[in-house]
Amino acid sequence: MEWFGDCSFRLDSPPDSPCNAYRLLLRSLSLIPVSHYLIAAAISLITFLYNFIECHFLQDLFSGFAGDPIHLTYHPSSIIYEAVVSKCRILHGRYLATPWLASPHVQTCFLNFFGRPPRFSYRRQLFNTPDGGTIALDWLTSSDVSGDVLRTNDVFLDESTPIVVVIPGLTSDSSSAYLKHLAYHTAKCGWNIVISNHRGLGGVSITSDCFYNAGWTEDVRTVVKYLHDEHPRTPLFLVGTSIGANVLVKYLGEEGENLPVAGAVAICSPWDLLIGDRFISRRRVQKFYDRALAFGLKGYAKLHQPHFSRLANWEGIEKSLSIRDFDHHATRVVGKYETVDTYYRRCSSASYVQSVSIPLLCISALDDPVCTKEAIPWDECRANKNIVLATPKHGGHLAFFEGITGSRLWWVRATNEFLDVLHSSEYMHVQKKISKPSTPLVTSIDQGPYVNVTDDGMVAALNNEPSTDNVEELHAIQEDSTHGKVLEDKVNEKDDPVANAKQGGSSSMAQTSSAHDSVLNDVITPFKTYLGPLTRQSRWSTWLLVYIAIATSWPLVGSALQIVFGKKLRTTSRERKKEECDDGERERGPSEEGGIAAATESMAEEKTEESGQRQKIDGEGKRE
Image (cartoon, rainbow, N blue to C red; front, side, top):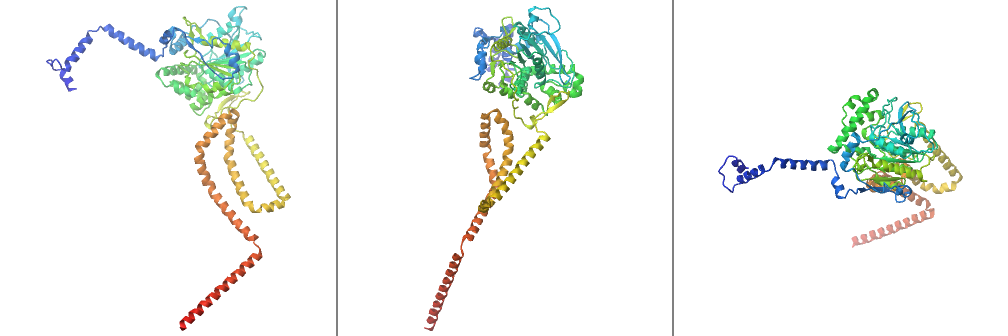
């Protein structure tokens, strides 16, 4: 660096010095027009933004705007795929995003700020829940969009026309653009559709102390039961979007086959809330969505400030800058979860996929900027014969704009086609009165409490632990069985004295073995308690779990068993040898004892004679 410092002061540098080279370079750069520098800066900025927003316009251009095929995941012997999805032309076609919206971020933002929804108005019905809450049901019937009848505020439904119940996403209501797209085009297909708004949304006040969250399935359960009771002969279908899709899948897994729903569609589900929480706070572009959704949640809380101030941490809600912050200060407190991660684990729908027992179509974009593809339960969907998972390469979050004008949503057309084919087939689900499937095995920290609403309006916590009465009853049964076994043993002993006499020598061994059996039962019983639910869910998972447990814990278990039972086994072997020796001595007769005594006397006489001869020889030697 010394020569560079000299260049700034010496003007008579030799021609071959580095100073002249830099001087010539700067002079050459100064001859380039400023506009060229601006063009280069613009190209660099465009390249950066192109990659930052994950634009795929050039890929679509080079492919001739042919679009990308839809990847379908399903069970090899799935009847739903063979009889329904295989006839859906849209799901077996290609999806091409609107060229000027060729980015998941641009599509998602355009949907929320513009969306281009069709214009119409709903018919509102206020539904009161058993706990005193209020839900706004916004209806749109096929006659509303066709204009065949005079419009009134009352809802009159034809029993033969199917009903589609929609569960909105986080902080969304019936006025959202994507829900208007779905409602209008579904009604155009001749169906009736109802948007079941979340509590406190859709311009309705909260009238109870229950709030909705990502795993709150009580409202959809109540609404479905109400609609089925009002229209028992009308087929019911469910559509969930974003968080509503998570609620939908969780509800289907909880109910199993015991629900009056013919089919369902889940759009852009987050699947695993814990993975989604890590993803949305990972990159700078995802943090933008995190802030935006947190802002919407804070706006929801401000609409119902009296309730949140009384039931949650209002100061923390006002300072929340992310979804996790809001869930920590509000959702976790109101739902009485121990931690935010506990709330995420309990409310994630991925663990309920295996229990879904009705036809279900799931659509998730691989470039979804809000619900990452990392959370998609690929293997669980493939293992369930009732589920077909469609994963387009592009689409954003709930967007999927198509056409040159961007006036249509691809997932709306795919949903309507799937429901129409399913309705015309013989594979619609019919409710079966059977017990609910077993819930996933969770740890103690994940056992809630999860609030449940009773008929009298009280909010109680669900608990999987047995009640005190059940525990006392279980102990009473165990004591009775033990007492009966003891009586039976006593009777057997009285009836068979000969066998008891024969078994007298091995009594200590029997006592030792019974003690070992009791210890082993104490060790094995807890494992049976936890392996029972696993066995009912999947036998393959059970055997895999047993193999892993044996392979990983056998060295430690073997050492522990050797330390605990080694001393007892050695003591038992010593006692056994001692008893054998005692039994041998008892079996020897008196004749053997007399023979031994005679032999001993003869040996003593021989020794006496030998000693006398030796003394005689020694005496003669001395005389000589």
